[in-house]
Amino acid sequence: MKLLGFNFTRINAERNSTNFKGVNINTKMDILDISEAKADIFNSKESLLNLKFSFSLNYEPDFAKIFFEGNTLVSVDPKISKEVLSTWKDKNAPEAFNLFILNSILRKSTLKALQLEEELGIPLHIQLPSLKKDEIEN
Image 1 (cartoon, rainbow, N blue to C red):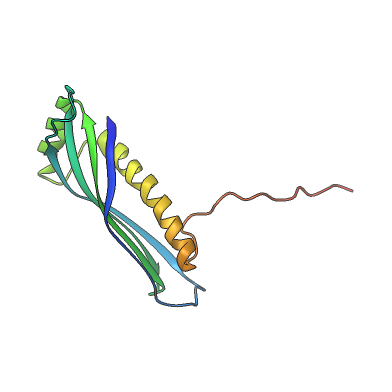
Image 2 (tube, helix red, strand yellow):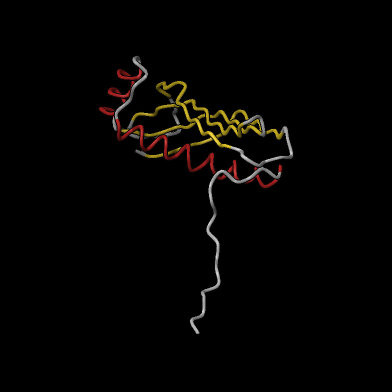
């Protein structure tokens, strides 16, 4: 599987309060649709799948919200493509495919969310690495 394209079609970020004590952050990620894609540019034996997704961060109680929708284009083996498209009718997909897609969405959306959180003064939804001074023994 190869990720050929990724873009956001909708980005919404808002901060409703200045008091962030007791804020709880809920994350939700969904694959909204999977369809076969045709592209004459790619001369490959692999099949192309277009996926629509959503990703949201809700800061409760009513502190802030960040929401993304987007598309991703994936190149997969034709056997996997058939399996994905047939199981998608029941809103399911093979586990390996799901992991690849959800990790791709999570990676890209998290980076964009961190940028928006910094600009809006919202607490970060993940902890960033930091350096600490080693304690000196006496």
